[in-house]
Each structure stands twice: as structure tokens, then as C-alpha cells.
Image 1: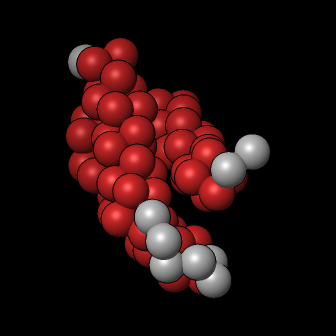
Image 2: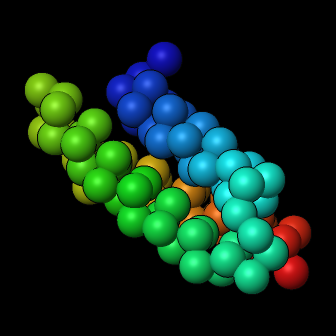
Length: 82
């Protein structure tokens, strides 16, 4: 398994768990306030994980994949919570 998959998959899982938690725990009027908070946490977590890796090769690709995939997950969650 290459470094891209190893470092991006946990970020996507955190986005999925965050979206489920927002859907379950947040009040219906707060869904669209809390999902951007989840995205902010994802962005910070992405940089922590990627900067913690020793290899600078592919940094931009890994960050872009992490954030773009998380945005897709949160967009689907937004559509489901409408």
C-alpha cells in the first residue's frame, strides 16, 4: 500500500465519522453550522498528518486528495441532511 493511500484513508474516515456524528448528535438547525466545523478539523488534521510524515515527495497530492475526498464526503452528508 503506497503512502498516498495510507495517509489519506484515515482522514476520509474521520470525515465520515464526523458527518455521522453531526447527523446524529446535532439539532436539525445546526447541521449546516457543524459540517463546516468538521471540514475545518479535517483541514487541520490533514496538515498535521502530512507534515508529520518524513517524505516531502507528493505532499501536495496527498493534501489535495485528503481535503477533496473529505469535501465529497461532507457534500454527500449535506445532501442527506437536507
